[in-house]
Length: 428
Image (cartoon, one colour):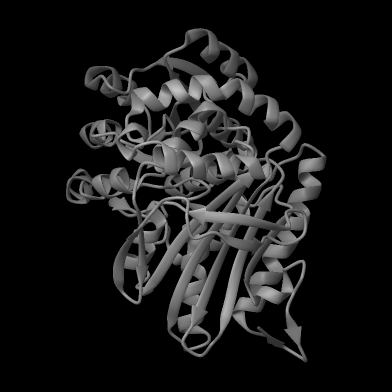
């Protein structure tokens, strides 16, 4: 039996088992080696939606870990610690203050930077502090400029002998690993060369992530979209190029639009795929219309100004939260790969709750780093030095905890709600 089919069967079994585990409020545990079992992990932004979800997932995945919740609000920190239990504590940290950061990092083994948004940030202060204190590093960055600025610290991280991963969340992050596995299977199993890679993402409402994801979305509307077409970099207007993408059962067909996301450039350069793009869409449909209108009506300079965007977030947040209560927070990622022999495969990941999925995904990267899967340096998730090839399957299993769909390396018609199938094994 082909390795790819074996992998799919494993993944499907994991998805089913994970869904049952989620219903029973039971999560698979990881038994770390003695030297890392009691590691101390600092989660910056640990009182926020993404950071809090990550801290919760880590405490469930590895109960022996010491979780340090980093933030500026002691009241919220105390509430999170009460939720996490005895193996947790709060540390007041200002990520814009070098001394505060280095003091917080002085006695931890890994720092998870979840204090976004990352758009328009001019410095990688947390990464620099991690290198100075020789602390392993992971971030959930979703900004191209920040990600490649972080990558420029690779040499310093190697010299300090610390492993670091940038863009290690759910998307980008897990989606990068899914893409890397599709490309690996195409080249090693099918002996064909990838031509086109397309990332498609869907999130209902704000995905329960609140103001941070709202600010991220608005800031991205101020950035030109970088994509690649047959090896050439092209620049496009944000929130254009709409496609109607089928995310399978539980999600269905959704409109998605071009956005400037870091996995486009990293996948193009690391995986050497000539044509790469990324799209995102949300629901209800009028949010997509609203974002399209903002792109057309507001100057790009306005949408790149963090203070002005923060004002927009404050205005929109009550309405977004109200709609979230109706829309839910389902999330889906579909990665499509087209190859030279007209072979098309996809990877699909869907979850009922983005706030849970992002925590599971980030925790999976954190545990992989603690297990020694990451070499010294700063890496993207799809680089084998970031997540070793042999460690990818386990990372995806952990990230897929509770998923309603998790499929790897299958033809599109096998997962679509309205497959275009002709005859046996022929699809268009």
